[in-house]
Image 1 (tube, rainbow, N blue to C red):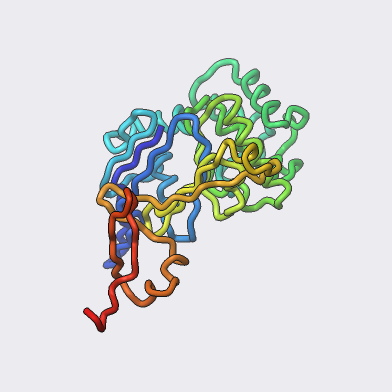
Image 2: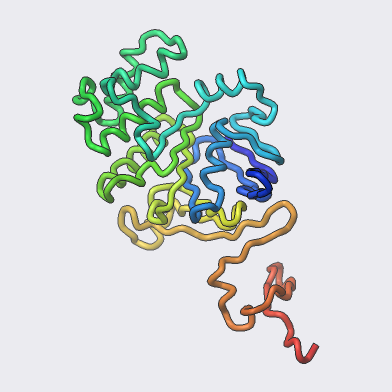
Length: 292
């Protein structure tokens, strides 16, 4: 569904250049439910904007659903944003029109696309997100979690292949956040839509299949859910484990988690010894500098 190769984004302001992405590689399979995590300024929201056609890379390759986004003209981008991708933002002001009812909000993107049978589709979507009883309510009459459910229904209105969510639970309490995230899982299972969620919340790993960490504008680590973990470990629902991987890019570069480099022998040095042993690549502290 998504293929990023050597993605670079440079923002220029006056005499200053800021590298938001520095050669990022990422592949997302069709029908996958995944999260992108990272500190503020790591480049995760920049990546999401590019996947949604809201921003363009400075260099690299980017394709979504077989479409080369770098080759798009403005008309192509408008069509892509209307038909191929749906958005859910943390700030409901970006998702919803406050003076419309819930059902009118869901009908709006279909109206802009000129689709018929809008009311029937809007009813189906609101029922799917558990708001069949709140269709005629205005936003001021809905809780934060209910508003976010309306936003998800809006994002699905034009039947996109890809759903992008930027901090969708950032303004919600834990219980409501869990409900929204469970809704994402249910939609992923039932309609097979690919979902990419950007979040600060590491606890989200329990709700998705894969977590990709971005650090300094590059993918630095992945955590992949083990579908058989419950059977092997006897863990309860929501407690299944993940295996963590470091990410090796196409140039052979590897980012080592910071905590690993605090170990004795690796501190205060920018060198490691690399050796092949029994089919494994092993990193050792550098030789004692005095002896060398």
